[in-house]
Length: 213
Image 1 (cartoon, rainbow, N blue to C red):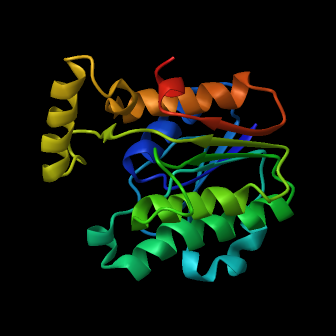
Image 2 (tube, helix red, strand yellow; image 1 turned 180 degrees about the vertical axis):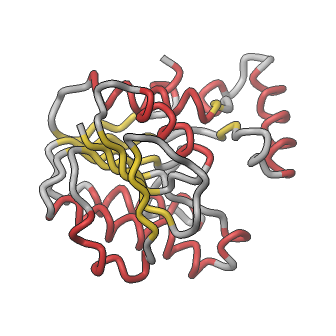
Image 3 (cartoon, one colour; image 1 turned 90 degrees about the horizontal axis):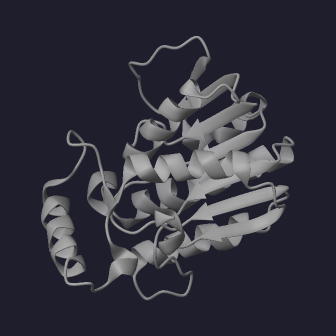
């Protein structure tokens, strides 16, 4: 199969790309990035694009499955407007083109608590994206709603370390197990495995508890 990945330079995206390159079921992996990336592999094709002008790259969006791991924070993006562009607009427009080009399977990393009617900004835009992509013409849509993610040591943010430690402490008392932190590597393994093992057509939503099975 030919896999496409957006968000390949992020914590989860990096792990997904590693697994795809190592997996014999995938003969080609195309990643779409905004900046330079230091990665080379005989199966890998790197497309450096401007997501704001995605229509110009429409002919490059060809393959069998799209993994969407794009995401940012309000602080990193520079405000709500910029975060909305990355977390909703770029992902939706790319997914729309993928569906129009005949890509049959779409796999999206969303978030626990995603809800388009949420009062809070982050779960609201994640919920809006879920709602929008469900109407696209893919044979299969996999939506993953992970809890707090434990990123690679070089990528983990300072405040995340304390949040993760706090949640893990609560979990040690048997509380709030549904939001226990998950390694990005384990999330990526689940995502790639399900892309191969789950042959059911339609929409499958993987809640937090599903990701630990």
